[in-house]
Each structure stands twice: as C-alpha cells, then as structure tokens.
Length: 506
Image (tube, rainbow, N blue to C red; front, side, top):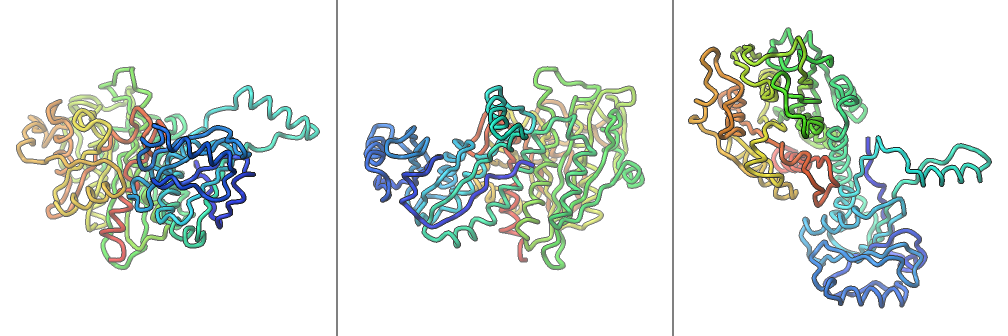
C-alpha cells in the first residue's frame, strides 16, 4: 500500500537552514518574525514577500514560495502562515500546504514550539498522498537511471528516492509521541484511498478479501465468508447482485477487540468492486469511475486498520459485502424477486440500485450475530445525494438522534463535511411493491431518502443505526484541501473520532 511520507522529529538547529539542499518550510506567525539562522539575503527576500500584497493577504494555513532563495542551498523556501493559537483545521491546512509541494527532495520544516505541530504533521501526511502504482517512469527518468547505472558499472539502477520530512521543533520527543496516533490515522486513510483508486481488474472481490485478511498481521481478527456460506445464511439479496460476475461474492468480517466485554460498534460497508449497473446498464460516460463503488467497504477497512495501529480501547466489528455488478446471461434482471436473509422479499425494479441489496443482508447479519451497541453503514449509494449536497458533504440518516449528533460532531472536528437528511414513513409508499414486500428503488424523487428508508427495514427495533451516503465525497472531481484529485478516504477520520469520543474506554 501507499505509505505516508516518512516524518522524523529533531531539535531546532537553525544553522542547518542555509546548507539544506531540498525544500525548507518555515511556520511564520502574523508578525512575520523569521527564525535566526536564515541567511541575510534569504531573510530579506522572505521579509519582502511577507510584506507584499500577497503576503498580507495570506490566511492561516496559506503559503508563499521563493524558488532557489539567495544564500541557501535549498531549491525552495516556503513561508507558511500560522498564528500561535491557530485552530486545528488551520494547522492541518498549513501542513497540507507543505504536503502538496512534496517531491523527492528532503523537506525541512521549522515549526519551533508551535503547539499545533502534530496537526501540521498530520495535514502534511494526508496531502502528501500520491497514488502512482501504475505510472511508469518518464523518458527523462529512464535516461537518468540509465546514466546512473552506467556510472555504477552497468549495475541495476537504484530504487527511486522517496520523500522525507524532518520537523525541527523545541521538543521532538514530545511531538513524536503526540503525532503517533495521527500517523495511524494517516495510514488508515491511505489504505482506504488505495482501495478506492485501484482498478477493478486488480481489486477483484478475491483480491479485496486477501488485502483485508492480511490485516491479521496488525492484530485484527479477519474472517472471509464465501458463496456457499452466504447461501446457507440466506443472503440471497447480496448473492443476486453478483450472480452475473466471474468474481465470487464474499462477506469479510474484521474484528478489533480492544475494549472490555461491552457490545461492539458495528461498521458495515458496501463493497461493489465495479458497478456496470448490471442489466440496467449505466451510460458509458463516466462508468470508469465505478471502480469507486466499494468506497464504503474501503472506509470500514481503513477505520479498522487505524484502530489496530493505534491499539484503540474499543470493540469494533467491520463487515463488508464484496460483489461485482455485471451484465451476463446469469445476471439478475429487472422484475426478479429475491428473498433477503431477514426473510423479506424484494422486487428488483432496477439492477443499478444494487448497493442496498448488498447492505440489507450484511446489516441483518451484523445485528443477529454480534448484537451491536450501534450500527453505522457507509456506501456510495445514490447519485441523488450528490444532487442534494454536491461534493462537500456526506448525507447522514439515522434513527437515533444521539448517534447522529455524535457523527456530525466528529465530522466537524475532523473537517469532513456531513449533513443530516430526513427519514419518514411518508417515503415508504415510494418503495411499496405490488408483488413483493418492497421494491429496491422508489424512483428519482428523494432518491437518497428512499434508499435509506429501504435500509431501515433491515434494522431491528430499538437498534441505534445510522446510514452515511458517501457518493459525493468518496471521489470528488477535483483535489481537496487534504487530498490530490482522486479518492479522499472520507470517513476514516470521522469514525475514528467518533469511536474515541463515544466508544473508547467505556
């Protein structure tokens, strides 16, 4: 998997600034005071930049860059504005400003005694993500590698240099300790981003399950249920979605038991590794992005990875339904009626409304097997939520006000947009079927709400539950503050924060 940039922490040594050959980033307070040790020419240039119109317009977390500063060996000097009493969000943005500029050069960050240095480091790590697994070297890089090999006597070219970051701070030991949990969160986010960015010919249902099974190495208990086991359990709604694919459907159960004897929090994720729409096939334009339809499962996996890495004192079980929705002679048809694990029958109106069929069975299984204290499901479920909320907020639906408030509070604390949308019995008439207990879509009006109403039918009475529709935030069309264009990993930080606040150590 893509690893966060290597970050080390060391004592302030201003005399290193002049001779550092990579990049140098200075955390600068509004008064514009620059650190001792900065060469005179560079200091004068930096002071002019900060006094300029652009410098005066800098907001907390913003930055200016001076290329090849005079008197320094560095290729760039980055001036990052951040007050001493900055908010967590601004500190992370300051780090992200540095992370967005990372290359292969070693970056030196002078953060001094800033109390938000750990948050700066987290923002840097998050924005420094770069998914390059399938990018070959450029011609220039090939030529450079060939020259290096020739100089080495024809030996194989060395592995490409990886970015490194060194934070120079007043108390490096304390900062390293404070940044430890943030590093676990960053790795969980990266794991989710990698999964969402992978192409479907690589991330098949089997490969996905194998990657989750490998997390036993970090302390998770992982169980993979195959199709025979799913049939015995009665998961016909889930199996119907994948019956037109060569990739076998699976359910993966990940358990982190870091708490006492209390009932676990259950996280359930939709894992459609590719969604063609099935017989109700999608338009060709944009279908390549349907490799991200396993985003909910990716978030669940990233959260469980984070919990294991930071040894969270909580009991959490993550369940993901892994399927591929393809058109085939064996594929599910519009008009088919399937029976869920719960026993309810579902008329399939549109085979492209498949995620709710997967979640229906996995939600029921999660409740009947684990008797959880609360259930939260995540899914790239509807295009309708994008119409409602754009790419700025995930849609939150819940039958429990306290749980909903906890999710919204956690999302706000972590800077991940979320907005609560309604549930209500009046919407049930849209999913009423003439032939079965319900149908799998209620049409375009209130599409994200009727999808949530459908899922609520598979939630037991008195079971606290929330559904999070992440269709708009999992793979937005442009870069965000903390991620380059591509997968964001939205939800890993929010759910980790929720677990810290509500479920850990209780």
